[in-house]
Length: 280
Image (cartoon, rainbow, N blue to C red):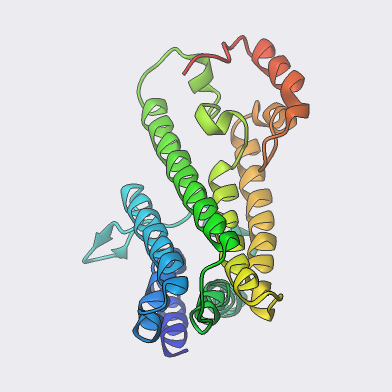
């Protein structure tokens, strides 16, 4: 709880002073690993905790590295951290009153989101308290967790590769769409979100599988899904306003989990924009 409280204070104060509200984004990928390493002191001899704990730490390293590559930790001694998620300026326009926005900063950006990080990581603590033989179901969950981690890694690499290609002079109509339709992004508009949410749902299932019962800490994964729904809607509104073809792409491709029922709509999309769907 000390780490959570310190994070809230740092995030709120830094946003208040700099008007850059991505400090919580810089903490998002770090804090779960911090909690795991703190709890590791008590559960280092319990492989039921160690295995998923290592997977969460790998998640943290991967996501932090991805955020760094995108410039999330770019720093200036005069201005501090200079990069900010594109959604915060949009929200600042929607809440122009400075006092109201700082209340939003305190309650939602800092307190709510950082508390959510703690809660969706918390099932691992209770997993560590359970001793005994690891069940086959738990082993399956370890494998699913690893596949989701790999999937998110691939999706992020494909997104970075797309941004680099898009930034270069090119004649490719598919690149000129303005949004990624390559690789995993061809079948889902947000494959990285799918894998991200999936990993924290699996973390909760670790506890359910080990204890044989549902636990109140599962609310963290549920609230995370609601947060991603809201974030997805906001992100897609911004994307649609920038790239006219995106509304057609929304009809052609599922937002999260790929759907076999959109194959015909996707073919219609390629034909409409005169794009070869097999081009990579």
